[in-house]
Length: 341
Image (cartoon, rainbow, N blue to C red):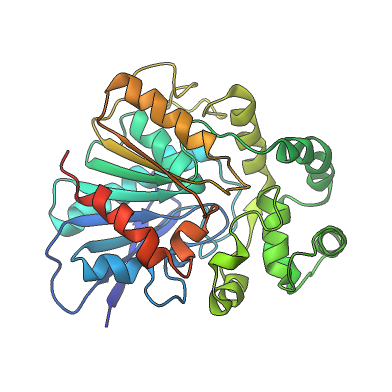
C-alpha cells in the first residue's frame, strides 16, 4: 500500500503549487525522483489504472517519489501560464522543496511533454543545479510537430482565440458555453476514432492524429475511460508560444524575463546533468525527430554521455499509461535512472 502526503510550495512569483510525496510501506532505499506532468493534465497522470502504474513501479524499486503539480496542472486554478513562468518560477522551487524535505543534496527527474520543455528551460538556464539525471519523454529543446499541426495552428488557432482563452477536452462531457459547444461540434464532425468524447477532444487540442497522444491498442478500457477525468483547461497562450518555438526550431522565451535566455540553444547548457531522451515512433503530437535533434545537440557537447530511445509501437502519453508499459518501457526508464553519471 502506497502512502502519500500533499506538500504545498509557493512558486517564485507567489503562485500556490504543490508536490505529492509518495512512499511505500518501508522507507525508500533510493533517493528522490521528481515526476513532472505535461500541459492541461495533473500529477495524477502517472497513476493510470493499469496492472502496475509508473508510480507503483518506482515505489517497488525503492525510490522516494515526488509528483509536481506545476502551474499547468488542472488541480490548480486556471491561469494564462507560459513555459517561461514555469521554468523560472515553478520547477526551481519544486526542486528546492524536495531537497529541503528530504535532506538530499541532489535528485533525479522524469519529465513529460510541456513539463519537459519547461523543465529543460530551467536546467539549461542553470536554475536546477541539484538535478543530476533527467529522463525526458516526447519533446525537450527542439519541438517538431506534424505538418497538419502547423496548418491547424495557422487556420484554427486564430479563430479559437476569438472565442475563448482556454481549450478544455472535458467539454466532450460537458460544454457549458457557446464556444465550448461550437468546438465540441467541430470535434464530433471531424473525429470518429472512438466513442470517448474526451479522447477525441484531446486529439483535436494537442495533435494531428486520430488519436494524437496515444495508440488505442496500447490502452486498456479502464485507462481509456479514466482519461475523461485527467484532462481539462489549457490556455491558448501556451499554443502561441510552442508554435513560436516550432518556427524557430528550438525553445525560445516569450516574456523577456531576467534569468532566462531568449534562445535556449544559443549558449552552452548551464547544467552537468545527464539526459536520457525517449520518443514514441508513433507520436502524433511531437514527432520523434524532436528528441533525436535534442540528443544530437547534447551528444555533440559530450559524446556518448547521454541516451536516446525511440519506441517503435508507442505514441506520446502511452509511454507512461500503456497496458504493457510496465514490461516494455518502465525497465528502460529505470535503467536510465540507475545508470551512474
